[in-house]
Length: 103
Image (cartoon, rainbow, N blue to C red; front, top):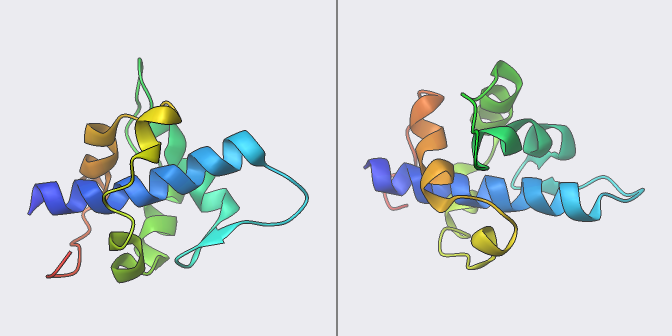
């Protein structure tokens, strides 16, 4: 189940990385997570010094459509954006969230 949660967070991280890389004038929203939530999670999934997820990160993740986020779980984009997939997959568990059963 931890692997599933990690894959789910990878989606969140990808969106956060996209926001950081391509932040423009339009607001970004992915699976009910807004740009602020995505950005709040990025420090928890990047190396070399990842930090524990902040309350704003976990709050954003808890409001997200986790089923939607699961649809992005096999993204190859994460490493190319400097995101550690293992850290990304651990984020839901660190936020005390349970991914959807078929994720």
